[in-house]
Length: 141
Ligand SMILES: [Zn+2]
Image (cartoon, rainbow, N blue to C red; front, side):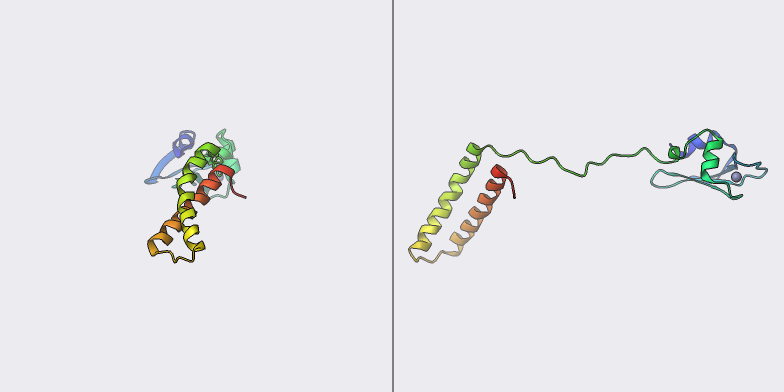
């Protein structure tokens, strides 16, 4: 609800400044407007009676509920749906090339050959990709 819906039920409404109004309090015999109505930035309607009426009494007096003062609740999904697993044939297809890279590097290491910086980079890349493929196909944990 916005402030207007409440203001339309009140008497003696005057806008004191943009987004802020004074009105006669519906919850007590109000001669001078002692009710302050304000709309907060997050859409809540803030109601204050300077004579001390409770917000509950004020909204009840105009036939509203306290929840009417709050903006409609927005449901936010906190969980992201689990990613669909990669079908094994696809995983194997993606992995084949990377396995080739790892094999060549492994053979070089087995022969006592030092890997060049480029080969090391390619190897690390292949390992990272294989891990990603493994997770996509089998999930983590
Ligand atoms: Zn009051």
